[in-house]
Length: 149
Image (cartoon, rainbow, N blue to C red):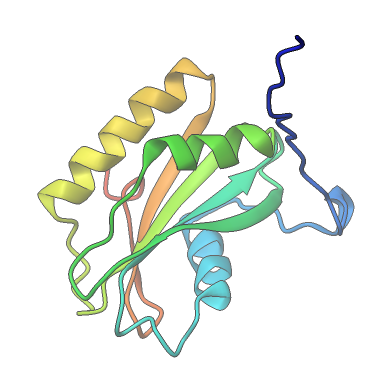
């Protein structure tokens, strides 16, 4: 009797090509691109966590929403985050989440999560370039600019 197992398929499709992709060269460029992608109807209501995926030239491969939570928090499963990063063969990432309250200061949980993700990224030779906190009005806080990362 032959044992059957499920087939696992991993795929990533580049629909626009690298030449047309945005290049990220500052926290301002990253924050602007991520804010443009955010659902403006929910940015004041629910905290979400997204990852900006980059190639070796810091060209954008895509933005992926990892989680959606409530008014004061959202859970981030590192296994899902890195499944997306590895599936897309990204070599650089920028983390982002919103604070519906508009408060720009990172919480202790934000800082601990960022350090945990950085440690995991280092194992895969993936560069964690920044973690950006967005406010509903489009202002932002950059962990890199503030020297936290």
